[in-house]
Length: 169
Image 1 (tube, rainbow, N blue to C red):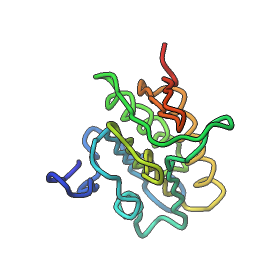
Image 2 (cartoon, rainbow, N blue to C red):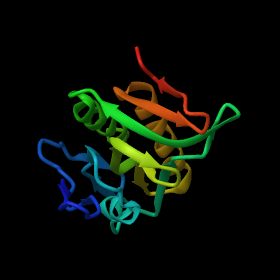
Image 3 (tube, rainbow, N blue to C red):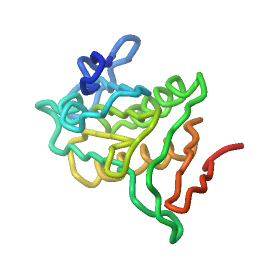
Image 4 (spheres, one colour):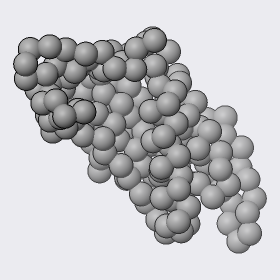
């Protein structure tokens, strides 16, 4: 869940494991967990990493998507994300799908909405597994699926005063 007050940083307080089935694996029992949220508060990478870490996890891989100052050769000064009301449900579904992989122990992912400046973090994802190859693959799959399926649109503002909506239907 997200715990935040105005002006604070959004953080992961708990990973929801309700309704998850335990799966038996050689020499260990795995209960996959997943967490996903859409928020207008700053994202905390360390909180996401901590949410997926545990004694079974030999690998925790994370990703931060950061607002950059250019796009297709044009200087970007700021951007704003708007999300469909179903965005958080879609994000949680994607996280649950990745967490269902038998190699994955836990997944935490969050996406910002609202106005962001250059250097702000727009997306945070973290995945834990027993080994690094599976963690890298799962984190890449998580980010790719979020980018492909999440109903969030980006309005980029350029240095020349023009703007452009990206990922709009």
